[in-house]
Length: 382
Image (cartoon, rainbow, N blue to C red; front, side, top):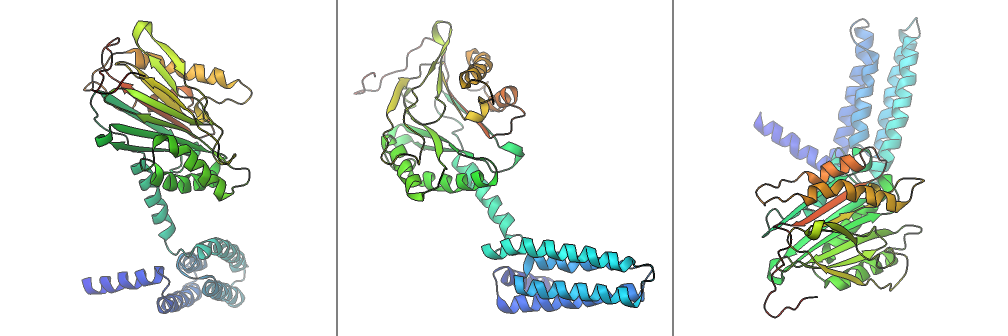
């Protein structure tokens, strides 16, 4: 039995890989199954449903190429029509034949797109799951880093696993440099998610491999070369030195990052807007906005899905987000007391039922307010 199971698995693997012989074998098996399922209702009219002919059509739609699938659909329809002609005084089988015809047409249309991609069986689902896991890996934030705490939440529109927003993170301890990138691709739905998946891979190869000041210009050049008509992406790029708290923010048409100052009663500062969205203007400049996070300070990076409300001013949405975040950021906590989840709670509070992708990143430097960040030898203040 184990040997038989192994042979079936190897045959199924060849079938999914497009092996011609395995495809012919699959067609023969499904045709035999179709004949059997077409004869059983004639032999057992009161115990076997003629609608069982749907089963080989569904399986064939997953594993057969278009031409062979068409042969299978014709065989199923012929078997059902023959049964209706031989034994069906109440014309019930005629209705079943019509349902089979509709099912066959649906399977053929679905198979057309799978065939164009060269996908069979559940290969497409496996690829999508792998891409989603890869995106989560690229977006993983540091768990423990000196006196820093990082938290993020990504809430795609419709609750899917893919989003027009994506987050990338890279950390180079030897250079005392941590980089975070939040990107929002224009549009909504599956097309925006597809472009987001493409860009996350391309930008993931760039982030951490070029100087921070060169990243957005390189990303912009990439989108310009892609030539996506009427499509663009906004981005905010954080380059942080954890040892000192010094940071640089680069913005490409994205909502500005917000810094919370916990000292002196607390307060908010919005970073400069920076340059235009990516993919619009070749050679566009992206100047840096600099600052330093003291102990107790925080940074918020967010996408417009959190703050944009149709018919209302964008600044109103930003103020609503900052007001909701301030009680959490004002509270002093140690590294041991903090757990991830604050970002998700903020997303639910500010934009629970929003038909847009929503992303929020919290960067917190822990410690008592008013304690200055230490200077490294040879590094002056900004």
